[in-house]
Length: 347
Picture (cartoon, rainbow, N blue to C red):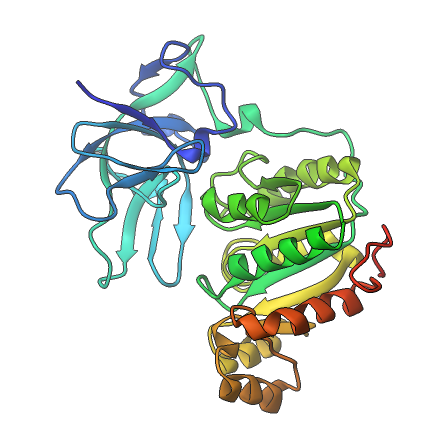
């Protein structure tokens, strides 16, 4: 008997085994964000695992059924693919373990073969297909006025989530009401869930806005993210810790996000893969961060090179001896005194 696994992209929906129908739809009816089901096929590798709606990883085997959503991914270190590349044979891949479904057209040869799926059909209710937008946060206003600490990277896997966890921990320690959010990238729950575990009171991401990834047209992204930002604004946190997945120059709408956040950004931390990547982001995007973290700072030589090349300060936050300096940086830059919240972040 097949086991049905709901990927974490379905966490905003109210799916149960009996409250939807499954039907094969013609390709002309497919669209980004559609919830679909695929059957696991192929030879099992270490990537044959799905992240469920609670963020736990679940191993899958051929014959199991996976529910995810159609979308696109353009990862520099792992793979590139789209639902539009799924052929008439219905062969698909899990582009992320969260259930972002498409077909890879470019994949890192250093990785094991990705999870392969065979299209079984779309999820329908009342004869109409069900999509992520049906469960997205909505709002009649675009107002957003929350002080925001923005985490950006030179690429994926540059240390943004690790830095975000440390930021949430330090600001929770200071008594701030912090909301954590991942506002660009490809769907995956465990990154933002780690913010909740380390100090954020509440967490959100673009999944809550109805997007499987942010590789979408800029207008689509802005229309989806504004209601989410307004929802966060109404909660009135002391600070939003916002992670932008990938880098501002990749096709994830990082530049659009920075524009939407605007003058609310009170601190920018660049997480970089190496010192020269810091230079690249500065020159290509015109971004002057307040601090550099990530692999670009993992030795004293790297920190010195960052300073030499850019004049920027770097802190290796995974070094236990760096806890004090990093805490002092946050308190000073955000206008907090002695680690105690003033309930108003300096802009």
